[in-house]
Length: 106
Image 1 (cartoon, rainbow, N blue to C red):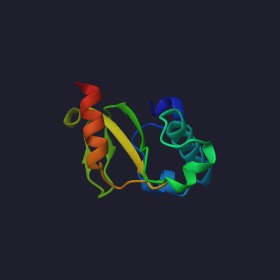
Image 2: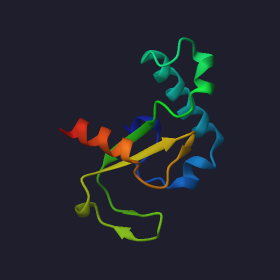
Image 3: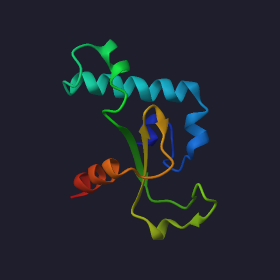
Image 4: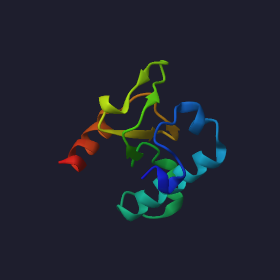
């Protein structure tokens, strides 16, 4: 939930990728997630497994401006989702994130 993390869900890359504290927070979430999922035997191993798990956050639909500068009205979308890959906020919705969001919605 974006709000639980202090975000709106409309953040673009610079808002996250240029914020060291944000990147550290998301990396901690990812690392502990990897441990809890059994992907790594100990927390320190998360640094050697950067590709999974992915971290994403969602928010209710609201007006926003896309990374390309286009104004998108809330009525045109169902929700906001932002996903990180390899330690950075991704510029687009990755296929893996889209599948996970679709599954969760079902």
